[in-house]
Image (tube, rainbow, N blue to C red; front, side):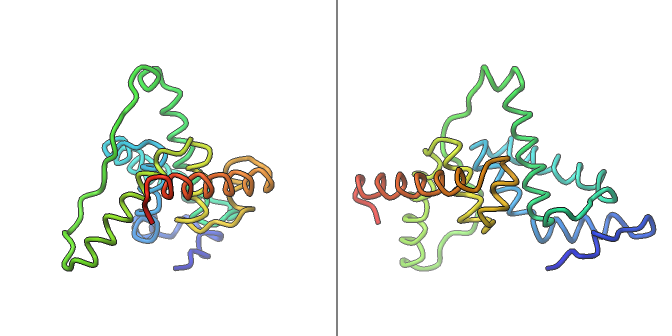
Amino acid sequence: MAFEYLKSLSGGMDKNVILEDIMLAYGDDVWNYAFFMTRNKELTDDITQEVFVRVYERLYSYRGEASVKTWLLTITRNLVKDHWRSSWIRRVIPFGLQTREGSSPSAETEAMGLMVEEEVWHVVLELPRKLREVLLLHAHHQLTHAEIAGLLSLSEGTVKSRLYRARAKVSGLLNKEGKP
């Protein structure tokens, strides 16, 4: 879904309709990215809600310098970083792997696939934040090296290096555990 019209917004457009379109198109991406960063479902829900509140407030100031997806993920990242800076998060670190609620698999093959996928996600979530974040942005959100570099304020070389290290670490951990 293209959001080219955001580049030329005028005060006469209905912000609610535009926000709804953006939420439908990118809501899962924002939630998943926030979850990868926080590892806490409730906090992720709060951050996702705050992302879209900020998008609504700043909708007419969107300059189109980055894709809408990159803009949303940047807002998400900044909100997570703000949370990490709070005094509460310095004292309380959430533990445990939580997953979104969903429907149960309808076939044994699907169940096995989900078990393998869960193990991969578990391994990825155990990566250091710097590696986990680059891997998520590249593999799940399909951002280019240049987009990731811009989002994280890194050089493309650093992004490539972190991506390589993240993949190597995931592969090593999965092979060590006898997984796929």
